[in-house]
Length: 153
Length: 153
Length: 95
Length: 95
Image (cartoon, rainbow over all chains, first blue to last red; front, side):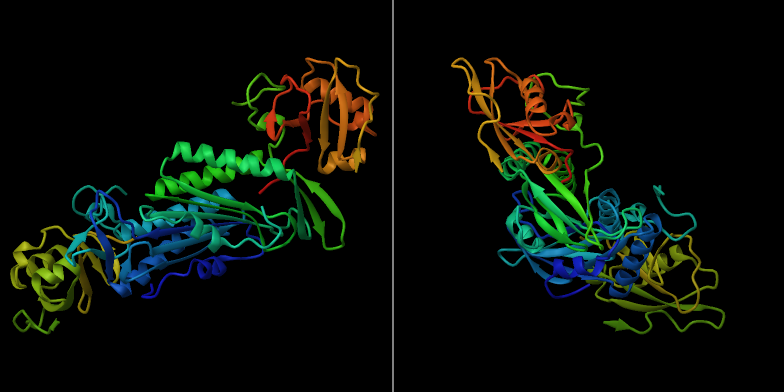
């Protein structure tokens, strides 16, 4: 995680390696759209110790699934203005199918599992908490045992 | 196309826009692997006028399929050493599903259709022409009429 | 703000855990960290019930929030141990 | 190397096209561009057959190569017009 602007090139460099012929990068940006209203920025906060641990778990899962994979990712915290990156994931693999699949896996798991929250900050300074779609307890993989609701794992 | 090293950041900047919340980048690199032998570099050549036209057709197809998409891409020509990028595709869309799908579409079509050829250059200076898998006439979409073989379109 | 003990001093046989609240939940309760005593054998659901009774506006916390124990997502029936850190996580919004 | 006319001067009723060879095909034939006369109504397949008869080592070119006409991938039965640029493309290797 970082409070500074995300540097995609740094992530790309971190995943490079001589046998890896394919690199994919995903960058999620704060966007302004008609449906969300006049968003000027988003402030991200996190449970930072768990955020680091959850990234590591997601990376480990991806590296187990795609053994030659190299992956790096970053979530920005603090106030992120419209047009700037809030999250980035880079994945390198020998071939492009794995690089795409792994990058997609990591971003989907990140959205579903990272302990991060956001407040939209509108042009007039008002704020609104927003959650990802389908981000209830049943959307998150617990570490064993039976849970509430109907976990989909 | 370019004879200089590809700058992924430049491609990412070219596809940015205020309503676009997701950017994906694919970078293909010259790799060295046990199965291919001691490759030191690859020399790419192209039918350059057609290369530009084919990129434009692929972009137009992607923009028709994903209307809010912005896409940019680049194929490097000339001698590209191991570890450097030979091709890069950036795609920006409102949401990540389209950004991933469009980026994948563009790279798959590029591999299938761009009039580009490559020679592997080995450590000892010897050279070998290489083709992409499934790069015969039947793999390429013609512009109408009946073709040879069994076109899959 | 850290509230060292919002519950009575623990009896000898109890366990003591730290509950953390984030984002909307921290705003709601006005606290971010609570030290709380639970009976031995308590599970995550017991901790949530205790928090809902004891922190300010606790009754407005969901009965079944997303919970992490010691930095991992956890289920309602996960047993707790002395010293555990349990976090109540509002709906996630990363990315 | 450009070879202006490897075929006899065209009769009045013929069309004249430019054939281009790339990569392995250019190496094989030792030429990159050939001006060639064809009968009116000729299609891509006729041009390929003519090239296989006329350029050096032409018989080693595939009978059914990948072909582009005026910068677009084309089928074997595509009709040709005077002034067209037809390219014989070895198996592609972009990316």
